[in-house]
Structure formats: C-alpha cells, structure tokens
Image (cartoon, rainbow, N blue to C red):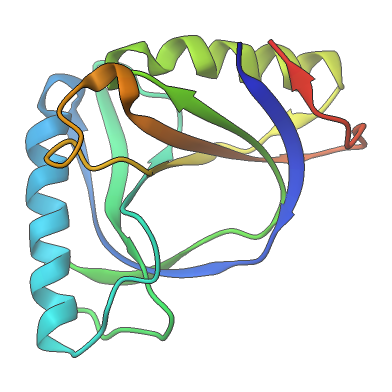
Length: 162
C-alpha cells in the first residue's frame, strides 16, 4: 500500500547536473552527477540541505532528460557541469516508495491514478528524493524514495491509500 497525498511545498534551491541520457545508463549518470555536485559544493564550502534528488523533465522513455544533485540552503555558482536550480513550489502530489528503484513504476502508476481520480493536471516535471543510501542500506527492499509531482487543479487534501 502506498499513501499518496497533496501537499504544499516551498521552492527549494538546488545544485545539480542535467543531461539527456539513455534510460539504461541512469545509474552511471546519477553516480557521476552526485559525485560532481558534491565536488563543487565542497569547493564552494556549501553543504547539502537534504537528500540527493533526481528531477525528470518529462516521462522517461528510451532516453530521459534528467537532473541529479542536492538541495542547498543558499545559491551556488555554476561550475563545469554543475548548475544552480530549484525544485518548484506549490501543490505537489507525494508518495514514499519503499523498495528497489526498478519497482518505482508501480508507485508512479498509483500516483497517476490518484491524479486522474481527482481531476488534477500533473506537471511535465517531477522529482525523486532518495531517502535511503544504498551504501548504508544494501537491501533494496528497504530503500525509501519520496516521489514529488507538482499538480494544478482543485483537489481533496485527504490522503489516499493505494
């Protein structure tokens, strides 16, 4: 069961790397983007202000336009591949996915049903916040990923369980 709810979020400043990559190369892209972003943040004396994220510009297909990095408390200066950005604020549908990344599609399907039932319009942009560190928690069945998908339209604020 997945609890899904609509919540209000403030914009969040970020630093990350954006690139269009083949879907089967996402793991390598994320590793590179997180390492490169941390290198730049360290050089600028900035600490991440939350867990790493992956921001998707449109639904993934054979390739995906994706940004990966970290939220930050203060603006950063772009350096190399790393650019400042933000996670948008406003109404956001959120759900915590528990399990391996290759089963995220099930939680996305539940979110799409939730959005459709409520007559909401989803944004072309959505992001995942990786609440679990696979190096610390090696069992994929325990991984927690917060999916956030901005929406417009009127909605009940009551959570829905799928």
